[in-house]
Image (cartoon, rainbow, N blue to C red):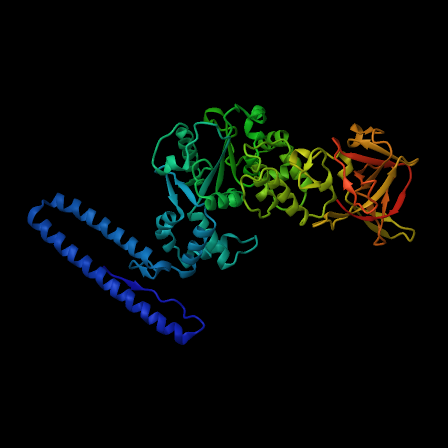
Amino acid sequence: MRVRVHTCPQPRHAEHAAVKFKSRLRVYKREASKLTAMGNFFEDLVHTVMESTLTEEEQDALKAKFHKLRRDVIEDVRNIFPHGQILEPGLPALPDVMEAYATYVNNELPTYLVHVPEKRLVSRQEVKKMYRRDLMAVTEADITKVVEEAAGRSVPTREEAIKALVKGKLKYATFSHRWLERGEPSFRDILMSFRPAGYSKLVNFCEKAAEYDCCLAWSDTCCINKDSSTELEEAIRSMFKWYRDAHACIAYLAEATSIEDLGKDVWFTRGWTLQELLAPRTMKFYGKDWVPLTSSINDKQDVRMLDALSRATGIPHRDLRCFRPGTRDVHQKMMWASNRTTTRVEDIAYSLIGIFDVSLTIAYGEGHRAFYRLMETIVNRCGEWDIMAWAGRPSADSAALPESPRCYRALGEAGTETQIGVSGNNGLTQRAWRGDGNFIMTKQGLQLKLLVVDLPSPFIKLFEGAGRNGVESTRYGKCTVGVVDYWRFDTSGQGVLRPGQDHLCLLLRSDPFDPYAEWEKVSTTELLFVRTDIDVKKELSMLWL
């Protein structure tokens, strides 16, 4: 067995590194010498036995087995010496490629995947072994080709080109479907090579993944070890990224027979499938009996499919094609989630972690507090007034925050303008903004600036509901409201209500027997708005709700 030792660049402390390197080199040579001697002994023994006892045909069969064993030994040695120090002759692995390969597998691949040809579970370490030879074969010419193919677009750096090559070698598909109460293969079923009820669905998924040239696949039913709280938490917090990085997402709508009726499938009512719809860049929908619903390779580029998905979900084409996670457009994203349900109460929050690109500790058993923690995190990163456009049951932890996405309501035309230009007396355009973008959660509660108005008023009317569906309300009698989306034209600390516009407001109350009591938000079943007949300009008040 021939062994090549590949040296690495010396670190900063050259003298210490040289001593350490020489010591490691002696170990490598000693181990390599043993392996070479062992290999030569077995080879001589095999040839002696073959020539004296076997026919030529039998000798050829045994030689093939011997060479397979030799390759396996080399693979084992390669795993003992990481980063490609021990290489096969003629296969000089590039150190930065192998480093990028190890980093990608250890940090960005799902913890477990299904090996499509064999329908068995493989861990990250097994994947690393399976594809090591392919990555060792990557040459400088391959990296240059990736850079050249990007001509006309932003040219990738060498590091980006290597990462693209690694991802291309380790393509995997993800599965999106409605979970059944029974008939879903579990992690333990597949790990133990059982063939449980529902296994045929996994087989069909793997067949479709293979059509996208993917030898690896990920399914949420059987690729998460739920017996390990650490692995479960990693899966939940990483799931959006895994769907985003997948080569393709296979969506199975068991009740749909065509594009026209796909919106009736229960898939569109489940909480987890929202991120499974938004995250992937390439997606393929299959209906009943695994019949493709379009002839497109990528249904996110099919206009008819996008129209049907938009009708079923209320999500615009732009977001269906290239969704950007984050804490922008919070109200809109909450509206998308408002009609979806999850089996576990906590999953209402956990399924939105990736959509809002926030970090949240997973703690099953906390119930609705999970959504409060999610909202608390979002509030501290968001600066949009319409995050307050909710009604219904508040969180048990704060009257200023909703219990779930179901509390969010449509704004209609009230939320269309957030920033405008207004001509002043000097003819110059003056910019104006709506609401307070600097609200934050504190120990005292949600801190924000509101324009406080006492009702009834001769110039201001209170309405329940947005736009044309709004109904003038008098049932609250004498009350105080805090307007959320007032206009600000300068930094004077004053807010303005414009005539003919709906302004979102919160119903407020304080303890009449405590003159030092803070205001608190009162729950209402519908959104409240005020309309004025004239411009109303008032000083803003800092409140803690």
